[in-house]
Image (cartoon, rainbow, N blue to C red):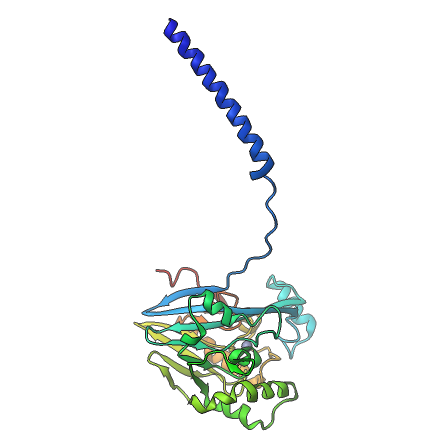
Length: 327
Ligand SMILES: [Zn+2]
């Protein structure tokens, strides 16, 4: 009896102590740990790496731009109201849009191959991050063996130099021959591309001396070859990447918007230097990648910018990759 009673008293004391401790913890929790969390601002992923056979492919978000659109950039030959209504019907804001810039880096195990150089640092506050993010992704600009320029527009060549010096000092350079010649010769340059031509002369032409120029299906390194995709620019090249039976197409700017340019391939795009050729190239490449179930990386596809194109009736649609490359 006595023993039981004392045990009971001890238990009661323990319980009382526990309750007191609990109450104290609760008080601390309310005062500090459970205070409202501060707002941290938007967090956007900017590096995404996946395996393709024995290659590693890293997509890096050089940046983004936000502004008015999709019309008149997309559906350039359509009435504004029709394009706005279509955007709305697809769940997109009718008069505002964002476009991303995404560079693809391929490590073949022997070479580091970088596709395009991103925007010039300082061109805008929200882009020109590629060289810095390469370091975040685990590489140094000095390690890049090959820089492949898909075409000569500012968002693809701007980051070749900084302060008049090459950003990738040890790289060799690869251009499509027709593209390089077009910009270098400077004949029939449209008014809206005159500043672009000046920039090409300043930051791209100096690399011509140690460059390789590709025609048709030309090889960059073993496993990577060009696929002509003229239209968006006079001589743009897409690139077919293959390792150990796994394939991928880097289509550069064949489509610049994952809805407007893919679901309405015939709508003109103001960025296309030859608009009708842009249409023909979109249809040819969309047919190829949908028939072959060939995955795509695209410079202006929503990050992480890897996916598929499916046929949808007489049109097409973008299907983002999910775990396809993780298995
Ligand atoms: Zn572009």
